[in-house]
Image 1 (cartoon, one colour):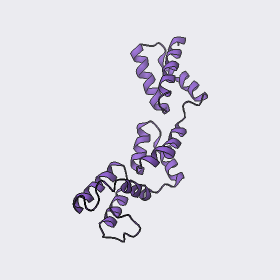
Image 2: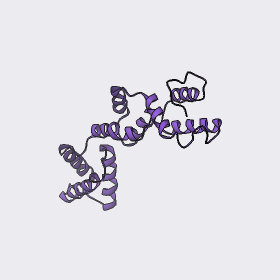
Image 3: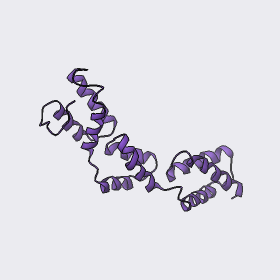
Image 4: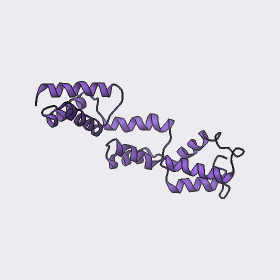
Length: 171
C-alpha cells in the first residue's frame, strides 16, 4: 500500500465528514468508488486503515448516527418503525442493532402518527375536502412514513368516528 492512497482517502474522508455523518458502510462504499475513480494502488488496505483511523478519532460511529436520528430527526419528521429500520439498513447499519435501539427506547408509533397528523391538520381539515378523500390522504401519509398497518387503521377508524375517538385528535 502506498502512502498516497492512504493520504488521498483520509483527505477525502475529512471533506465528506465535514458535511455529513456517514456510517462505516457508507464511507467504505464511497472510498471504494473514489479509489477506483482515481485508480489508487492498495485500495482495500488503505480503506481499512483509514476507517480504523477515523474510528480512533471518533469521526465514524454508527451508534452516534442512531442516537442523532432519535434526538433530532424523529422529533422533526416523525416516522414509523418500518421506515426507521429501512433508513438504517440503507445507511449500512445492521437490522438487529437498529431494532434493538428502537425497542430499548420504548418508542410508541401511535403518538408519532398523531403528531404527524396534527402537523398536517390544516392541509386537509374537515371543511376543506370530503371525508373519503381525507381518509385516503391519511392512509397514504402514514404508509409513506412507515407506520404499521395496525396503527394506521386504528387511527383512520377513530378519526372517522367508528371507534371511541376521545383520545384522538379530530381531523
